[in-house]
Image (cartoon, rainbow, N blue to C red; front, side, top):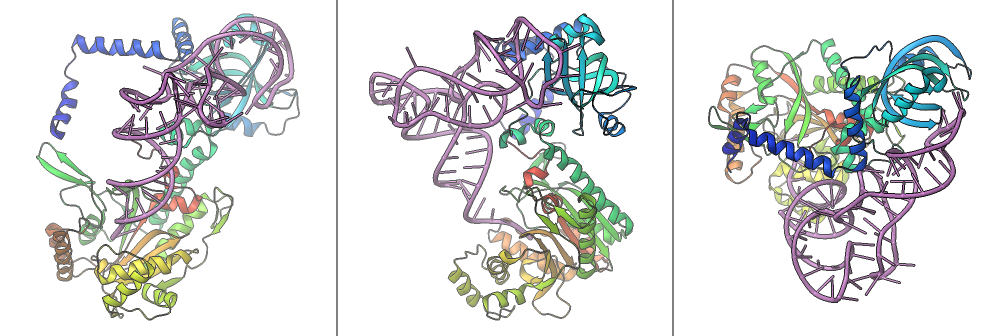
Length: 521
RNA sequence: GCCCCUCUAGCUCAAUCGGAAGAGCAGCUGACUUUUAAUCAGCGGGUAGUCGGAUCGAAACCGACGGGGGGCACCA
């Protein structure tokens, strides 16, 4: 089937409302139930019986409070206290103990806070207690009403006088006392979120970091925009794109690999402090630091350069660190317990200078390619595209990068690998570009943006030549973008930062842990 | 794209040499009014990822395919 036919099949299936389909679905359902395990069938039967009465999925419940608030309101009560305060709370049953005439359960709410509930024969009566034992399972959402007390062991509890199933769970919860396997954690993240505090924490940590970024931008008068994800022509980075097809126009479209060329069009139009936080897609390998779809921040500042944009980047990250750190400092605590101090002014090192120092031999943009090749060969480095600049970058990654630990701006890159960047104002053969390395990986990159449309066109032409020579990551000539540039783009500093990688730097976790629902086959 | 490892109950995992598929949790039945991974007695639960092969005999050995993990290549 071609892609078009597949899409057509999907769109027309909704129109086919034939009885044959309904029968097929019913048969599939029946087969599923028959094959389901005992626990599923038992719960399904409970759902049926609940629906004969109050219902297994009531539309609303008389909640008076949330668990976290109840806990906060009744701190440090002595054991066996009766407060005289009554609450109605709901949560997921994560713990269940039945001891004859008294039942203990623990309810957990979405933020992970828990409270114990006690259902006693003497309080609710024989019929209600029997129903509770019959219908309530681990994993169900449960509403309870009752007095806030502490148990004989001092556990804060709701002494139930009324209860109701808030939502019946048909599948059993995974064991709470064992780690979920890596695959289940990612594939069924909702279970991971229920069971593992760290997974739940990541959601909030990420949200805090991202809102901190937005707040920092707002402080400095930057405006957030959204530029196209579907593009006729992709550009702004060297990467292989995903391709899709638009039926109405009958054209292939690319999922964007970077927003850069659109944000620069915005600059031309006078949006002088502009940023975007959104997804990029790159059709390349996936590993612990690369995801095929990843959240990207790009920002452009008119009348700035790579120094001002570096200062902005440092502030963005330090503010984000403060937003997520436990004590509001710029020192963050990683999942492995180590602490990482991101405060202060981060050092700059030159790419050529640091490489020269590392190998004890002067390397400059004038160093002959043969000499670089000899060095690369000696170090066992293979360079796919034998450009001068690629050799320099590969050598640098081999000899200098492993030693970087503290946040460091690595600056002044070779011209031929940075086609959208401005020549250095005084050093020949290099561009005004930096990469920010933290803990050995590249977190952000910044530039003094190229504003000369004639030079920009020359760079595109060179890229097109490489594309013709078989480099499928090289850029194509974007005439529409060049036309915009020809109207005059103000001098600007620009930067890009991976949001997922920012979270990695703040938490010490792998990229798949920072992404709520990473791609799984 | 290439190489290595892996897939067993709802979840997490065992099983000496190829010789009758197990445990903990949870589930079912029963007991228990203060449990915190409760306890006690009893009981179910498996197309061993899928398909094929060698063998008297396979969860285990071989092959293909699929899922997952790791490494290499690639990675503005």
